[in-house]
Structure formats: structure tokens, C-alpha cells
Length: 375
Image 1 (cartoon, rainbow, N blue to C red):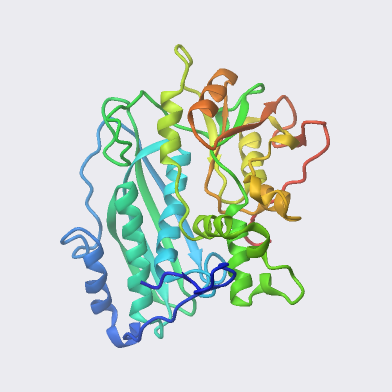
Image 2 (cartoon, rainbow, N blue to C red):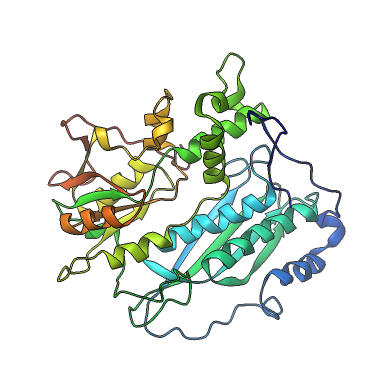
């Protein structure tokens, strides 16, 4: 419902958003009817009380994360349908759990703010996207709150549990039935000499946004600008749009991380996700670890078909919303993981330098780029 569709053109040059069907507004529904309707996305009875009740979860630490997504900043009707808004809201929070080493998702709470004129169909689509992500990665909708406001906003809190390594995960399923002993991932656990690894390519989400903006007549569609879909081809265009609308938190990379740990290697993993951009992730990781980071120019994690774009390097370094993991590992572990995890690659190393200093491998300074609120 509300998903984006390709225009019926063979070369897939344009992307359009369908109109939402007529539905009652939130003002017409009222608060209690809205809550009653939202209750069907949660376990029975979950929305009947003032708070969510969780059973104790022995054998692991509880991890909690909160993100706020604002209309016009994190999503737009021009580029993102309601179900995709919901999926992206869930994925952004689940990615932070994965970045801490969580392999079990307990659930989400959702704070919804929307103007009274908001159609119920938009809210319903958002919650359908949220529950679709939970069905994929584990956990349930635990509850939340709703309020009127002048701008649509989603405040998501995600809860996860660090794996104790004492049995199969109850969250994300790998199909192997095997669980390796694992621990937390902290930004501050990097050391000089660690290799930096990206779990996947960067810049795809930013390319997807540009394609959608161009197709909708937004900032990417200025007269005289070349058609991006023509430049990159329909296959990469579709992959980029999917990366922007339906990002995947990298729980699968955690399974590979644990399985690739060399015998006798202690658990020490530094890392974070790249939601604010690759360089922002590297800067945060290096600063927390009291190190500098050197990035190899020839090893940028960039989809090969993007290399022809003039914006390719900038989008790779600072495009943001790729939701990959950027990890710092002992060399033997990093090399083993790069071999085992498809799409991952070693991109540089941590060095003894001023905390957070970013350099290219030839010693030139690498200016920090990426998304930052209030700038």
C-alpha cells in the first residue's frame, strides 16, 4: 500500500508515487479510534495498558536506542511511500542495534506526531512497513504514543539483547542453527594497527534519492542535468532506489563476524553504522578509540557501476543512509571476515594519531563529510 512504482516505460527513466486512496483523517477518527486501529499491528492486548511489560531476558545485556524521523528531513511524499517510511524508520533503529552487536531484536515503541488532516491510509501504511521490518528481523511492536502536531514525526525506540553465545538467537534467523560466542561492538575498542572494514558499498542510497528526486521534478531534476537512470542503467537504478527505500540492517554481518573470528583471537571489535555517511562513521570510530584513520583511495566501497558518476566519491564518502557497518578489527580477523562476507572489503586502518584525524593513505587530509543535524 502506498509503495512507489515504476512508470510503464521500458527504460525505467521515471519513478512516480501513486496517490493514496481516500480515507478518514485523524481528526475524523479521533485519538481512541486511532489507538484501536494501531493495536492490530501489535500482539493482542499490547495497546490496552499504559506501558509495555517485558519478561526478563537472562543471559544477555539489554540495548536500547532511540531515533527521530521528521517529515522533510528524513522522508518526503515525493520520494517515499508510507510503507517505505515505516520500513526505513524501523531499519534505522535496528541498524543501531546491529552496530552494538545485537543479534536479537525484542521490539519497537513508536511515537507518532501528525497533523489532524493526515489521512488514516498514510498512518496505516507506515505501520504496515514497520511490522514488515519486524517480521523480517524479529521483535514486535511494543506500544508507543500519538499526538497532534504541525509536522509528521516518528520517534522510534528499539530494544535488543546482546547474544550471550549460549544458544541460537531468537531474533534474526540465519538458517544454520549455529551460534558462535560473541560480545558487544563499541566505538572505543579500536587500536592502532586494526584494519577498517566496510560490510558493503556506500553511495547507493544517495544515488537512489537523486533518482527519485529527478523523477519527481525535485532538486535532482533541474533542467539540463543528465538523466541519471540513463547513465547508470535500469539494474543499478532499481538497486539504488531499493537501498534508499528499504535499507537492511546488517544482522547477517554479525553472524559472519562471529563465525570468522580466528581461533584464540579475543573478542575486541570496534564499529558503528554508516547512517550519517562513511567518513562520519570513520571519524566517530577513530575519535572514540583515540586513533586516527587512514583510508585507501583505491579501496573505496563503491558499487562499480557508480564509478562513472562525477558525484560517486562524494556520495560514497558522505551520502549517508547506507546503514552498513564499519568495523575495526585485528588484521587476521578483518581478512577472514572480508573473505567470508560477500560484498565486504578492507578500506583502511587505524593509526596512532590525534583522535578522529582522517587521512588518505598518501598522508593527505580527508575532510570530514556526512549528515549532521542543525548544520
